[in-house]
Length: 108
Image (cartoon, rainbow, N blue to C red; front, side):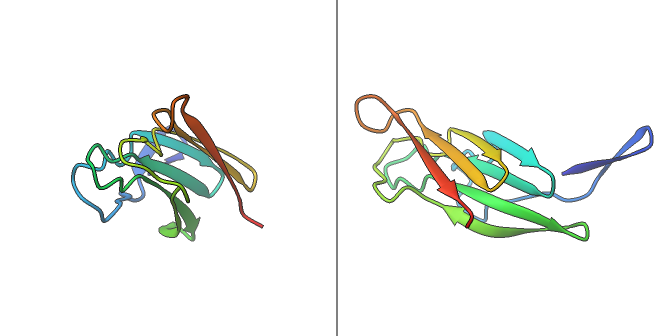
C-alpha cells in the first residue's frame, strides 16, 4: 500500500496472503477508503480460492476477513475479480459452473 503526501508517494505496507506462493494473491485489487479487498485465485486442484479483506487503522493494515465461496470447486477461479462499494463486496469466479459466477458479501 502506498500513500500520497503532497507530491510524494511512500510505501505504507506490504499486504500478504500467508498462503502458498502459487495462489495468485494480488491478481485483483479494489480499495475504498480504509478498506482493501485482494483476490487470490488458486491455480491448482485444492481450490484455495479466496479474497482477503484488509482494513487500515492508524497506518496499520490487518486482515479483517478471508472470504471464500460456500460452494467452492476446483479451478473455479474465485477471486479472479473483485469490487467493493460501501459495505458490499463482489467477487468473480469466471470458471465456476458452466457460466461462471459472482458472489456478493455484505458487512452487516
